[in-house]
Image (cartoon, rainbow over the protein chains, first blue to last red):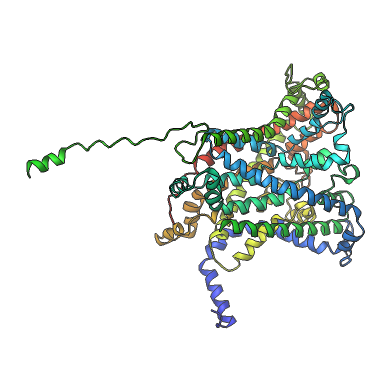
Length: 306
Length: 310
């Protein structure tokens, strides 16, 4: 193959493409929409990150200025970066393992109970706004569940302003995010655990697997490795970009920027200050962060599969 | 034929010895599986119970909150269950919705139409694209796979100007198309289906090719039935994503706007509407919950093994 000329290789590729043209026909309708509404806008955004752009006037090229400002002049961005790293390091892995754990245990039950349990775990993510109940639980007056509970126990005398005190904001947002972490990744893992053939467990029992933890390590995890990778990617994208709960609960911007994440910083510049060039630069930084973490975790998970 | 042979032919099969069944307390219904001990079952039940309670408790509160009359919101200590459950919050919501310029049913129809259209379109188009991405080795496929994966990592908030320009260039501003078509090209569903399809054994596809099945036939008759769990999952995710979508970016006519937008207008702000806000949350959950339950039960039905051994 290698000693062929470029022309020969090109003709071979063309023939391969032509012989499998049905593949391209199948992909075409989706790819047209995908390119029009995702790929081209993303490329435009990357280009805009090197400009100053306020939607009304034409973009002005400024080179690396946006990126330099982000890391040198923008104190809020550094707070957001730190918060995001703390937030992601906790909600990401913990949410991922909880999802796997739940998906695995649920699979041990009878089919009807399986359905009910899957529903119970998935319910927090099903509605767009049901997380506002947390603002009532952690309400800042004595009518909130958390405050009244602590006051009756005599631990505190005055109600705590949960979502206005910077010490509490990030931990509370993390709890709410963990509550909501059984989302798409969890569903993928449920499909994965359920698709492992029961016969493998029977065979393994004969081969000397003694308990269910060995079953998980030697059969379930290797068998569902592709699903684990899918779920990891969904978990990573979710934990960086789902900030609806954080904004609804801690406010926007939150007190002393204690709940400020890169995503909220981005929305601030994108929608309120309308500095689109700068917002694009933030989105590119977020993109690079996600791709890096994703590459590391997927590499780790590939090893698990083997 | 001798008598002996005849007798052998008609002799009843000898009764087999009954196998000794290993009996144990089957707490959670794993049936005949081995390697299950009772204390492990108990531990699992406790753990899953704690997690389920954490998961379900806030929702229980939300439902009760929506059933409380206004004065019960200010009890001290606050009660989790409503003492005199009323449907006042829901009634208020509906009476408010009747006074709007566009009727409630129009909003509901818009949301349903957009959700169903976008979900069906997405599942159909994305599964068609997922099959070559997962299973065919043709020029350019690696690049496309990378692009789908990377596009998931890019937050969509900043691409709205470009999307607005595209939609206006197509003349779709202020139509249903502006909401349906971009949602059909979402990469999340494609990614899930593509990754699921990679687990379908190649031997099955080769056998179908040898039997004279075309690529389109393979897609429709083999890939789609085998990947049913994947596309049922995607249906759930996509439906609820579109259902909760606020389409005011591309649509100005009040008659084309969606339910989440209309309801959020009612409940924004005022403290007195706290119960009504929870009522909205509960109401908006019903349809996605039904879609979830219908699809999820079907997923469990179809999880049987494919019958292929490699």
